[in-house]
Image (cartoon, rainbow, N blue to C red; front, side):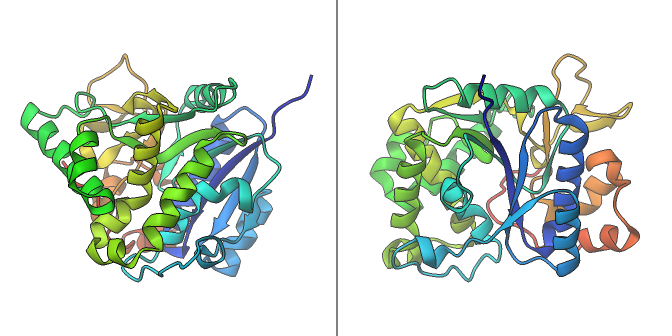
Length: 313
């Protein structure tokens, strides 16, 4: 029997590296499957590279200009390369059967999420395993859910214009911070094509402010998924966006407030730059943040505020 080679991929700059350490430590403790760590270097220190190597990680580089014809550098967002590298994972880290992407500001709480995503991506259909954003999970009112969908309309409009936005804005928002995808899937090529159109077009770049640039890679993936029906969607409990609210640490477990029935598989510390103090105080980081040194605990409070993470609650 041939076993699939699985790459657990993530990337960041030095600002986010203390959070990335929490991701690695959570995978080591919880994953219980064989995989290779693949880190896309967005500009980390020598000490951080040494730490990754000590954990067995493979470190690769990604230069957008080398892969996107006519690439126009986006000076609005320092970490943009760690976002738009995602559709190029089989190119920059070849020879794996399944790729799992984790944003560096998340950590694995329950291995069932990882196993489920890999199983869905490995079934041979070529579909991407990905979680949607469920309004009910975060306790949104109807009015708040409508506001969230309006954000989706603005994201689509910035990339594709109002006609496409009018057709897609009401569809489920799929969060690209966590996904699993087979190497042979057509999604890779389709997603790359959209990225290349977006980040090499002066007219599109000119009409994207920082918030829309931050969401461009995810919006492009949503367009590919919905236009081709090439995704297997999971609930928000598999990729719980903490900035949307309704989360607590209770008896050592991060859960939706008061919910003993639905387990959160991956804790996603979204909009960390704005909510760092709150997240630290509520012990929402891996192991409650106990793995951080004093210097790292101080440093994460200075993580730049991200764009495009609406409706913090």
